[in-house]
Image (tube, rainbow, N blue to C red; front, side, top):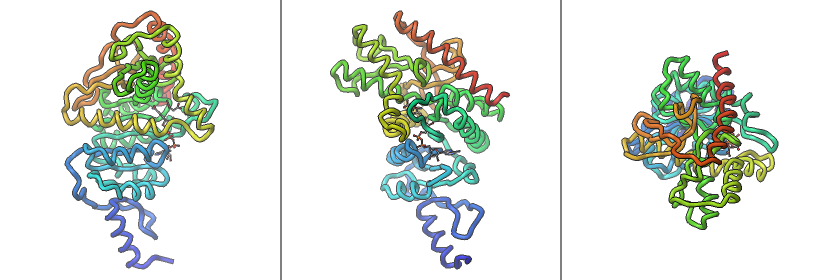
Length: 355
Ligand SMILES: NC(=O)c1ccc[n+]([C@@H]2O[C@H](COP(=O)([O-])OP(=O)(O)OC[C@H]3O[C@@H](n4cnc5c(N)ncnc54)[C@H](O)[C@@H]3O)[C@@H](O)[C@H]2O)c1
Ligand SMILES: O=C(O)C[C@H](O)C(=O)O
């Protein structure tokens, strides 16, 4: 039975109120609402791709309360109507719009300043992040093709694992489309820093907010390289503490995967970390000075084409990439191991698009 014109009008009014872009009853094709960013403070337009997932929902909530965000687009292949309706009731400045399914990807991306990607499958116990490559590589490719077409100048924060391969995949997609700007593609490794700060603070018996640990390399196992010799404030550790901390930081993700026992990987701490990193990117876009975070980016710090180090975020993205600084013997050995594994993961990502 076809719905009455009255029913469709009512749904259109609700849809405009929620600023969502879902099909009306009886409509097979999807229409774009012309909803205005009413009352929204001036700010940046941010899209979350994978917004209905474990990370996506909490991250969307955190972006909704970020005063730098004026428009928030929530995209997923499932469940965005509910998540969007829910988040849109929060009385903060950002106007929220939802987008459901591949047919609405382009609407979700058009005009965005920052695109955050937590789309893809998470690990279960016994899996490595590389085991996710088969599924997540294709998801990241499709989403990045959309970005290349609809918002080629956006800053991209890539969370989907394996980050050591998905960032090279994204770079190749953007190169193929002729829109690659290495400064604008950032792999999110903030959770490694967040964990390192927490675990180091526990050992030192201080507030984690006072600690800053640079974590370089990549985002998987031995490629996660905490530089404990460069902790701020300057601190010294015993050999046992260094070994314990390095192991715990490198295996923090697995610790959560095992504790969740099949129900996924880190979502809440990751949403916090992603929101922290996104906020830093937005402050950089605004032109704030001295915004420095670790990120997995195109880099000449080592012989590898991508590497995570401290970067300075500015209007153009990762505007300056800082060198590793002085490493001790333990860290130099860790760096060699990290580079060996990283090289294979980067090649795998590049070959996925080139071959
Ligand atoms: N970089 C990091 O530090 C870090 C930390 C934690 C998790 N992760 C990774 O983030 C990813 C997501 O984790 P999660 O726990 O949120 O998983 P999840 O399964 O809870 O959510 C993933 C979401 O992605 C959506 N999705 C799947 N295919 C999509 C597509 N083609 N387009 C848009 N959305 C799509 C799903 O519908 C789902 O809602 C995983 O790959 C995980 O390994 C990375
Ligand atoms: O460990 C995982 O699979 C998810 C994420 O990369 C993490 O570090 O928590």
